[in-house]
Length: 90
Image (cartoon, rainbow, N blue to C red):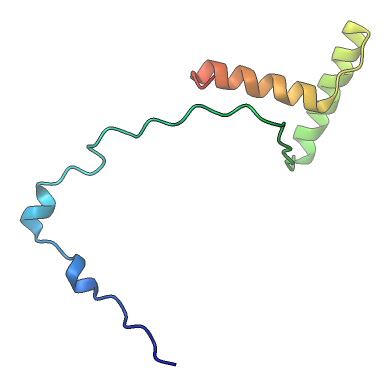
């Protein structure tokens, strides 16, 4: 079986003058397609002990204040939505 010839990197080289006249990333960024509504996606994350303990404490305090169960997932989804809204992402 014959091996395919390796690409010649010399064909990719450009002169310093040509490189100086290029503006990397000057083109307008492509428009991201709108997200397609579909089934929910699962996300698993690993939290450090201190962060997990803080999340548990927060959920417990919210449960005591509201009288209804608050899950870790509900808290994290709410926080993520707030962060994305603040960043202008959604």
